[in-house]
Every structure is written in structure tokens, then in C-alpha cells.
Image (cartoon, rainbow, N blue to C red; front, side, top):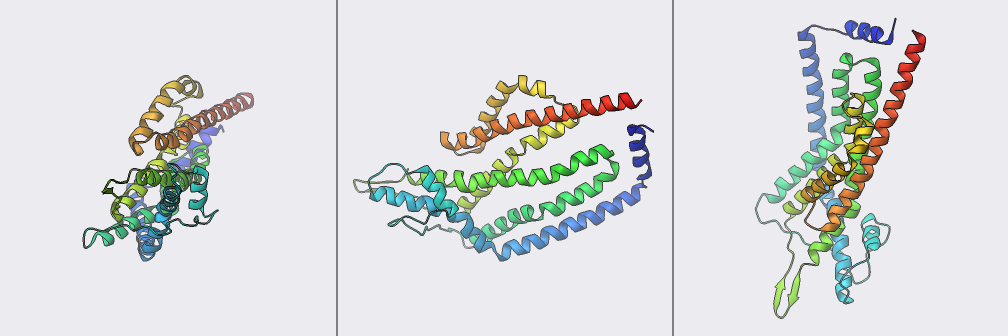
Amino acid sequence: MSRDERDEAEIEASRAPLMDHLVELRSRLLVCVIAFVAAFILCFYFAAQIQVFLIKPFQAAAALHTVAQNQGAHGGNPFELIAVTAGLRPFPEGGMSAVELIATAPLEQLFTKMKIAGFGAIILAFPVLAWQLYRFVAPGLYRNEKGAFLPFLFAAPVLFLLGAALVYFVMLPFVMWFSLSQQINAEGISVELMTKISEYLNLVTSLILAFGLCFQLPVVTTLLGLAGIVSSKAMAAGRRYAIVAVVAVAAVVTPPDPISQLMLAVPLVILYEVSIWCVRLIELRRKKEDAAEALAA
């Protein structure tokens, strides 16, 4: 029996009536809802601590900006900014170690906590959601498709966390440093940055979501390669167009400054090159399998 015949037999054995599929879908959706609600309650309980954690990059940028102003400097050391944000170095002496964010509506802080809890719940419950999705679609997949689909359940969250880490440790400190540097205090005129807590956390979650999704590029292209929709040769030939598209995406999803755009564009170009090699490895493995089946026949 060939590999295709074995796969067909396996799928045929897993067939079930429509009602059984609906019952299974209901049970898996129920598990997903329970996991999300539990994660939401947990994140809402620790919403204040999560907010403090997310404000740390702003705190590091404010501290180093204050020291730079006191010393009459116009810029800061980017490596020091990253090190302070990551906790590898303490706040500099003379730097402001506290930042003030405002809430201009009575329930603004409550709704902000709920948004943070919802965003955190999706991230926290993702392993459960992804596993339930896999278990629901697995009976309809061939054996080789199961083996190919499962690793992406682990690769996707890892790449998302890499994108989120880039935002937290690199992107946010520079964005807030740039924002603080636009303040004016001269000739009796003062323009100070008074950031709303909701707007700051909306910026944080938007950047994390944008970077996390953009970092899924290798996962998406590899899946397309497995499906035979794209090839490594076509991706390599379209490298120039891909770089233009990457720059356009970076210009849309990041704040309007060249540093932020480069921080997203450069990793995406690197991930595109990684994607080409992933698709190339898939093609080589497919050729070996076809050659082995031809010899066996």
C-alpha cells in the first residue's frame, strides 16, 4: 500500500457524522471559552502589575532623558537605554525614576484594565486555543500534514514573543525618548508631554500586535510552501518587491520616525530570507520523499 493510500484509509477511518462534528466543535469551543475567561480573570486581577510592567520602558526613557537634559546633551546612548529597560543597569543618578500618566475620564482606568486583561488573556490562553484547533482539524489531515502542522503551533507563539520582546526592550524606549525630546521649555513657553494611560497602553498593545503578527512571516510562507503555493525560486526572484512591501508595512504600523520603521523593517527582511531557506528545505525533503517512493515502486 502506497503512502497516499495509507493516508486515505486513515482519513476514511476517522470520518464521522455531521452531528458528531458539531458536538465535538461545541465541546472544544467550550474549552476555549473557559480558558479565555480564566485567563481574563487572572490578568484582570494582576492588571495593575501588568500596567507597571508595560510602563517600565517609558520610565527608563524618562530617566535617561532627564539626565541628558541636566547634562545639556541632545541625545542618549541607545545601548544604555536598552540596558536600563531590560534591568541590566540601574537608573542613572539624577534621573527621574517615576513617570506620571493621567486618566481624564472617571472609568478610563477601569476600561484600560479590561483591555489589558483581554489582550493578556488571548496571549495566555493561546496554547489552549491552538491545541483545541489542532485537535479539531487533525482527523481531516494526512499523516504528513499532521507532522508539518504541529511544529507551527510552537513556532508561532515563539515568533510572536520575539516580536513583543523587540517592542518592549527596543521599540518602546526609543519611541518614548523621541516623544519626550519634542517637548519645549524656553522663553516662557512650555509644552510638556502629559500622556493618558489609555493612549499609552493602546500604543503598547498595537505595537506588540503589529510586530507579533509581522514576525509570523516564516510561518505563513512555510505553510504556503508546504501547500505548493509558493516556491523558494519565486520568493528569491521577488526579493526586491518583498523589501519594498516590508518598508511599506513598517511605515504604516510604526510611529512616523525612521528609527522605528528600521527597527521593524530590518528584522522582517531577515525573516524573509529565513523563509526562503525554510521553503527550500521543504522542497528538498519533498524531492527526497518522491525519489524514495519512486525507488520503492
